[in-house]
Length: 81
Image (cartoon, rainbow, N blue to C red; front, side, top):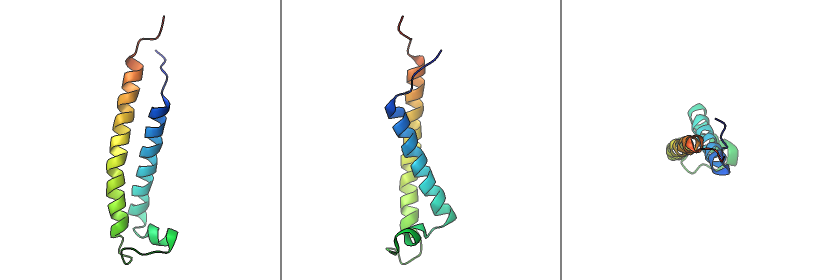
């Protein structure tokens, strides 16, 4: 049965991917914020980046969870006759 995914679904997927990418960047290089901006709000120890990564991981899990629910709901709706 074909179903149509909404704009909301795709925005949740994009948010989840962006949040996951930030987590991956922090795991690969904990000082990415300093490299990107030149500012060192944490003195170069990476704690600000890890704080962002943890917060965005929560956002990613939530966004992917809501997107999955959205996909399940849109696939369970009967198509119009």
